[in-house]
Length: 331
Image 1 (tube, rainbow, N blue to C red):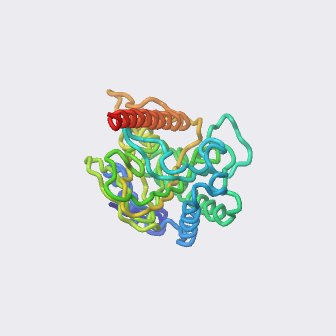
Image 2: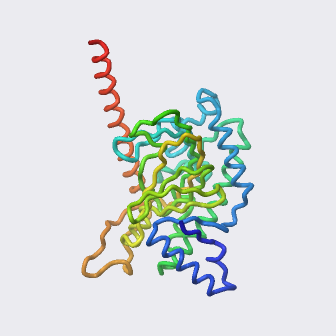
Image 3: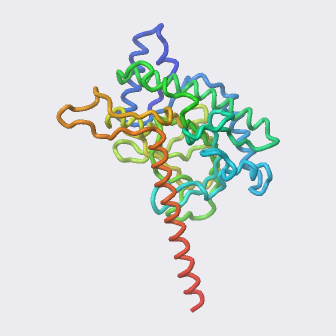
């Protein structure tokens, strides 16, 4: 797995070294569809503090009043805590076993035009949690913009074509995820999170322990074993559309593990209503564009609707299985 230095990408004092790193970035995006970002400028303390607060929050009992107050049923769209087992099934016929806390830009007022635009739902009486998590979010927002600038340069897109649309109006959610250790042999259809691609432009992921798996363009799944200070960069659906398939979104999943894990996922989106389409330089004149125009908000909404449908289908299957089991036991 290629390690790309964000510092080298911006090092104008050594143009030769900078050009080499840009080429490595392009190779990683077009040939592998993922990479590790290092020398990104986010301090280890900021990362450590966020992970410690995530651990404290997720280790509260589910009945704890602070957790219950932050439950997503009380929140504006895309915010709050989801208990284990209530995350969407991104792949059909699968169940998710993780729990998560979702937040975004700290906006006081709800704007109904943007479904993911509004206040966060922080757990009460946990100021250290709020402070550490939001500091992490803002630091990764800086990384988001810098990486977007380099992607624009790498693929000869107009300057700020992507980065200028990464504003507070974007549904750039961040998830603090907890994966409990699995005891015994897990069911075949149970995943921490099942296989899917992300709906945004790209994703910045860190993990406390190994466990995330990424699918290479060759079709092979690779386990990512890195420390929490190296950022796993996964490419998203919107970037695939913009490049007309030159860049492919990264399929990824988290199989169940016998050790508990934490991860922090920063989805990097463009403004909700901004519509993207394949750019001219990536389109074969004879074949035309391979993708229809799509807005960020619609892509997220459609993806989550499908995931929810998968979850509902699994729930129905589970009810049928339980009914047949009860009938058999009563024979």
